[in-house]
Image (cartoon, rainbow, N blue to C red; front, side, top):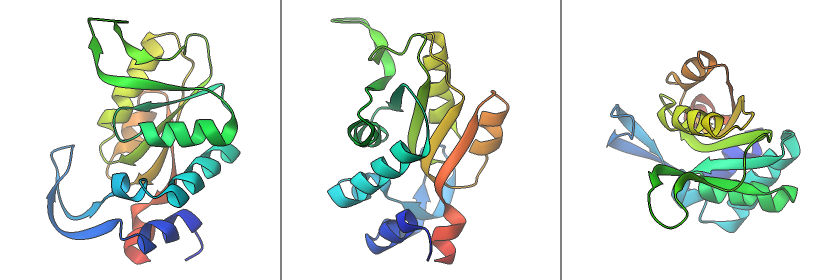
Length: 170
């Protein structure tokens, strides 16, 4: 396999086969356990460096929980700040949906796995509402199940480090 991130994911056992219900509600015969894979510092560092070296941005952002370690890894590899997009806005403490300053900044939104694109669409809308300039989402794995099209309809492009077809064919 030529794709080094795909190789790392396969070698870590991130692909499991069985009967799974995904966050999108869809059923699948395989599951991509990115969260477990990114607990391995070598895999997380490789993902962070690949994204940091491949895109230009002022700040990187990820939707809690799965994309946060990826945003942190990209931040560390690039030396640029990161932001966390909460699943829902807080109404206590420092209220809000975003931790970090994204206003008027070029933001790169990262995702762990995209299926229908729901989480990425939420992140995109939340960032734009906060005044961020965002039109690119980088996902570690694209399940090739509609996220690309859904994001394009919202003026954003989805770029994948790995497509699921690479993992299933690998």
